Image (cartoon, rainbow, N blue to C red; front, side, top):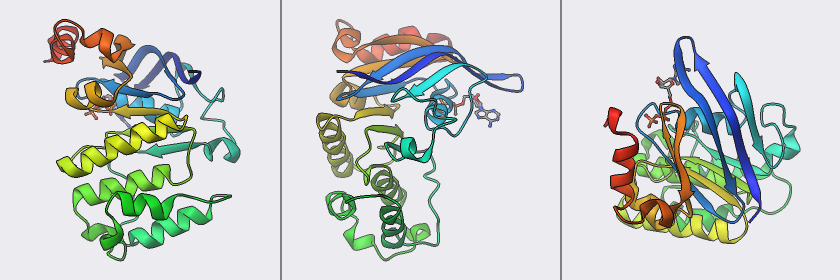
Length: 235
Ligand SMILES: Nc1ncnc2c1ncn2[C@@H]1O[C@H](COP(=O)(O)OP(=O)(O)OP(=O)(O)O)[C@@H](O)[C@H]1O
């Protein structure tokens, strides 16, 4: 498995708030890397740096060997990003939005397949603002994956999903990784990390508290106990 994502001594502060203090970790192609950490640990900030939406103050973010902040369009076409809150245009319908995004992509997309798979066909013509939270999440996930990215950066993709939808999302992410992509997922769910994560990175106060294969980290006491032990000052 080759390395597709690398964070090196990354630092990002907002005034006196240090969101990411000094974080180094990487994610491999063909694998799912789950990033866990308490609220405010810096997960979203790192994901936005990797997605080219924020510029690190210090250190480096690299995706497919490229600096995401300076990356040209050709690089962005190889990466899929799903942010928290979705950032979806509320008046558009899923069909309109996803058709629009598909037309920006050179070559065939998997939009229709993903809409069917994530059970969105019955919601395709409804304004996004009228969709449930879980339905919006699924639209955002289709938007991130429709162009078959080599790297998928997904910020809490299963948050708020019902058990059926979550299971389907887990299966989809496994397939995307099996097809060769690096899938990076932030989550607050130990269950999710243990079920789908090949590797787990635990962030705590902007630093890496653990970075290991899931089975290794969960060995003995289990992932939940390890997590609390590593992040206990904030628990
Ligand atoms: N634009 C900003 N301006 C000021 N502070 C910010 C900004 N973005 C993030 N922060 C702060 O940086 C810290 C890290 O935030 P971040 O969103 O990366 O955490 P997180 O690990 O994703 O948290 P959560 O689990 O709640 O999603 C928090 O204290 C947050 O308030």
